[in-house]
Image 1 (tube, rainbow, N blue to C red):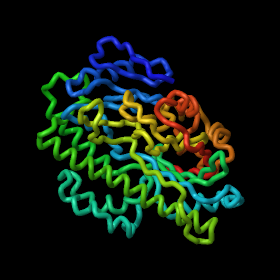
Image 2: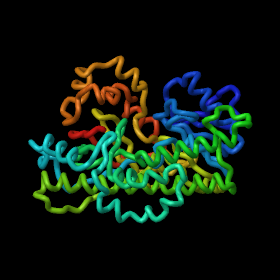
Image 3: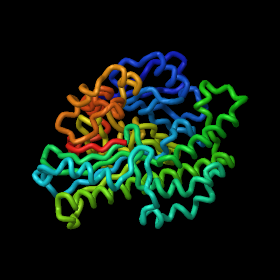
Image 4: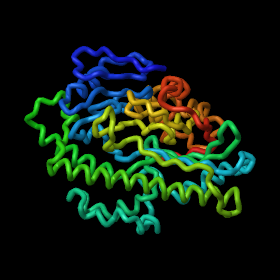
Amino acid sequence: MPYKRLNISGAQTDILSWVSHELSEEEKAMLRNVSRLPCVFKHIALMPDAHLGIGSMVGSVIATKKAVIPAAVGVDIGCGMAALKTPFKSIVLEGKLKKLREGIENVIPVGFDEHKRPQKEAEEWEGWKDFKKLHKGVQDRLDKAMKQLGTLGGGNHFIEVCIDTEDNVWLMLHSGSRNIGKELAERHIQTAKQLHRLSDLPDKNLAYFIEGTKEFRDYWHDLDWAQSYAMKNREIMLKRLIEVFSKVVNKGEPFQAELTVNCHHNYCAKEKHFGEKVYITRKGAINAEAGRYGIIPGSMGTKSYIVRGLGNPQSYNSCSHGAGRKMSRAQAKKNFSVKDLEMQTLGVECRKDKGVLDEIPAAYKDIDEIMRNQSDLVEIVAELKQVVCVKG
């Protein structure tokens, strides 16, 4: 689907949209507010999975000149996906799905849980040398941050074993920078709001830092650190996932991955677009520059996709980060029952209880429609369906 240029009354910047649904007044107001910021560059790109967020829409790509908006990046700094294509066919999984799920849950803490002691890879991570340079408000969080490196978290974070349409087995997971990323984000967002307390902002959640200031430098340092933490977090979990998988299906023997992908979808980076260096905030979007691999998940009962970017300049080389919610967590819990969850996750070895009812597949948009709507942004490399899903 080619993008369309939205006509939103009062908007001061072009808004290019790959969304197919009719935008609500609240969504239009959120886009209008972002468009009125003086630091916004050229246009806003709205990905096909976009939905309401805080300050700006999840699924929006915002380019800014000499400024960054911490609340637009969000509180789960560096949240993203990792996936690995194994050399195995689905026959190796027969009769082993429950054992795989239990094995994963035994070695990777989920929800609010953490490791009893830091993992070896966590202790050896070079990022700790910069911890003392982080915001003073998190200096008492070192022990927790070390124990949480290599843990899943809750909400929509997950670990899956999947099979593609060619019968290949894949390992996949979704997680971010855990509590330390949230703590850093919240402190910097509060600082930005204080700086703009006398400014005429369209929304206090759009308070931004200006390049060259101490506040900007401090945030950029902490942002970069948290994004590295999130990437390392996924690396460690993927290693543990490989170990469990190998133990259950391959007698513990190592194997060579055929493809490995690890990408952020809540982050900010300095890039060159339309001939200028700008800050690109992908809030629920991934880098889809030409040839780059990415991961677009559906939900705990639907398909996911491995993609390769087409490098569309109008989207700032971006694409969607998933199916996107069409229903809030509260609505999902109100509208569906555990029986509905059981039906919608039929054939998947996963939790089927009230604790994950808000993650029911029907609370998400149709992933196939999302993929059709961004055929000019990415090409599909593999179509995956999960058989094991571990949730926080």
